[in-house]
Image 1 (cartoon, rainbow, N blue to C red):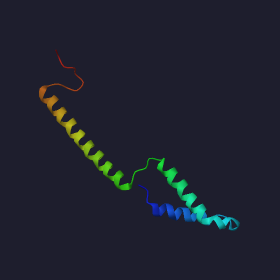
Image 2: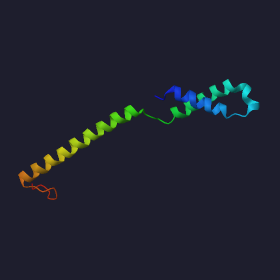
Image 3: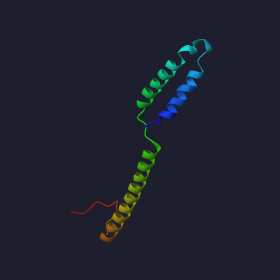
Image 4: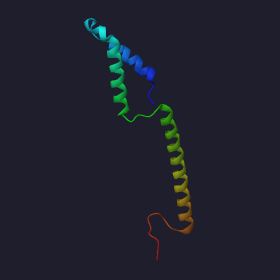
Length: 90
């Protein structure tokens, strides 16, 4: 989830860029900026850094297990006298 404090800060910065003649509606503009930012970011299908790090760790463990299984299969094939390039004999 996106930190709403960051959105508030960004909305304030955007409203500060509004020309002085339009600043009467500054609070309303700030709320509109915030709503537009929230809607736009919600469409991006973002994940938090924590979620990303967890999935990265899961992927790393999965890759390590896959490499271990590949080594095991290669050892078993070698013990059976089968190379990976030779089809089994029926």
